[in-house]
Length: 331
Image (cartoon, rainbow, N blue to C red; front, side):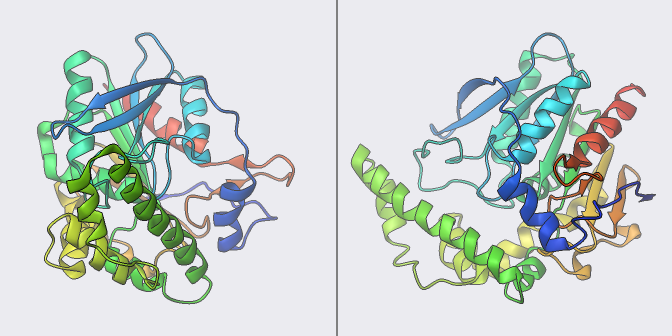
């Protein structure tokens, strides 16, 4: 199903690059007073969770994007907005993203759904009757949609929302090799390569020599200048994919949309600088439970609105709680 969007871009931020860059560089949302929990994973590593809100309110799981965390502006802003609308939230920091390196050579990638499944089942055992939903941004949105499709009707979620999702990973990797989008590619790759180098040093310092040696065997990553190269050298090797093509094929979430049974809203901007029109699904690829809301503008996890440049408004923090509230009322 295709939804007519109500989003109107701020008149002073109509360019898709400005929509993308403004929130990440200039937004300073208040930091919610969070409660952190560390879960030990089945492979003896850990994931850190940041909760906002208490009591018996419905609970929303939040998944951040590549190189993000619970401290990303879009996560903090949404946690605040959700609590105002009567929802608790828990932000999953993907492995190594919580401010502390994880203890394995592996961390996370666009198709790694094991940790969200572990978190969901842990929460569901604790709170079997609590209404739960999930929201994912960018890479986190891809992970969410893939997981929803994999699980089919096994999940007890009243709704899900995925925003600015790289639904076809090879198309997005190609897009980031052209034009101004190379700016985003360079920034992300610098962070990722620094992360691998520092994590290797950290694991050696702890005496986790076997895990550190796995990272060392990846070789010198400094000359890598595309996601095709990085994902082939790092992700495919660490996660036992045949190669980068195999990783992109198996991890792209568009192929899972038809298997989703949880009521799901997919929000995509046509001018997203991380993607091309070939990423967008055809309506016959959507299950009856998936609604696609396409906007003409909005950039990548931008969607800034409002008339006052000194008081920007963030449409996602209106639209996502609105959608969740609508679905909750149908229970």
